[in-house]
Image 1 (tube, rainbow over the protein chains, first blue to last red):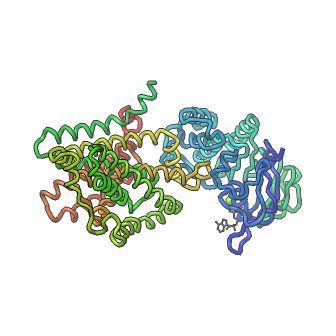
Image 2: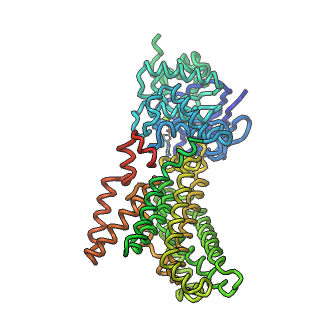
Image 3: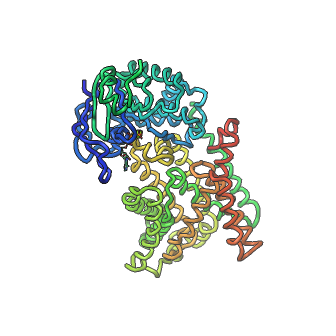
Length: 246
Length: 333
Ligand SMILES: Nc1ncnc2c1ncn2[C@@H]1O[C@H](COP(=O)(O)OP(=O)(O)OP(=O)(O)O)[C@@H](O)[C@H]1O
Ligand SMILES: [Mg+2]
């Protein structure tokens, strides 16, 4: 089933076309990797999907519903969760409270009270491996811990689609493998589609994605199953600069 | 059940402070006037904290809500004094009017200004207070700059003795009750989704929106609540206690600044902070004006600035940070 559909979406900043006539489809439960060089429009694409920006042209559909002009706070309850490229914790709140906010205002929204949200937060924090930091202020976490907390916070929203903007940058390769398999496991259990922006970290793409979308200067260059995409000569040229060693 | 009770532990120190204040004022001769001022600051701080502390937005026009509340009470007393059947009920109607008028003004201001972010909101609100004052004076609303004096009507409604007891004692008790109510509401908000939403938007508004929080809605909730309490404080401290009202006296930005100082000194967004801030501010201001009359501002301003720089999270914020894990902290939020 098609969960998210973009049709000819364009976003300009002044004279710069950050996202140029991009169309794509994400099925429910699918893992999709988005790659592309710096400034190719990945974060902007995420912002268009989550509603931080509205497109200048084109439409965004979620579960068949046109959400092009829906404000972001109305998208979250539909089942749209995301993490940020630069972590944005609610600094003075504890890790537990941060994650509980996700539960309270995400897709469970009206159905869950504060105590239940905190309980759910505890479970997710434990699972994601932040148990010992539960009561710490989010501002005191390390950069990597903040990223993990953001993943936990987004998972607490019980999203149907989770957008991860460089969620694992700065992590140790070993931790990445572990995190990827953990997230994949949770995503399968809860039928979450994941679109992950995974620049520079090819192993994360390979470990997670069924499909890869390549952006180049705001346009979609390739949209194909992972293996196929990585062998595509245009990708090798534009993105990797060299063939994959294997 | 036990959990529900535990949830209200943090009210203990707040109410303990109020209780001690009351006892000192009642039993130590010559202290009631200071206690009366301190109770006013506590109520003001607690009320303003619901907006300033919980959202992180600075409203420079805050005193306008107190001013409007003062007028609400004044209008009820002057217009209804002749209806003898109403009696003391007129005061109750005055409170209702103060509440409604302050709330309405906050909806009007909030609907426009709360769409602006942080600093822009602060700038926009600077004009509200002055604008309202000039509107009343210029358009001669509510007697314009002649103000309203209703000592006679208050005496007529309550009798001379009760009216006098009201202004010297009972008005202060009502302020105390308002402060207690404001503390209750603050804690209730803190423990509910409203508090979580406000914390989130105070820390990072853009992230909060993406997390599904309708930030404008929650800001307006905090704004109306805070403004309504300000209206009640105005109706009590500035109408019942002193039965007259003149625009320049009630739309005086000086009180907004005091309220900001109290909240920041004590700890913005904490429950006990406004009380601590009110006591530190009120007591030092009182004794400085006795021992160094005329110089208080010169000495006071730098001290306050230093404290706020040293403890950016306020006195209670700092306490919370230093004693995070001790059981005592269950009582302090
Ligand atoms: N708010 C903005 N205002 C103006 N220009 C912007 C804005 N956001 C992004 N851009 C520009 O749009 C282009 C695409 O940026 P975007 O952040 O989407 O790229 P990205 O693929 O996420 O890059 P990176 O790999 O560095 O994260 C860049 O040229 C960027 O400078
Ligand atoms: Mg980016």
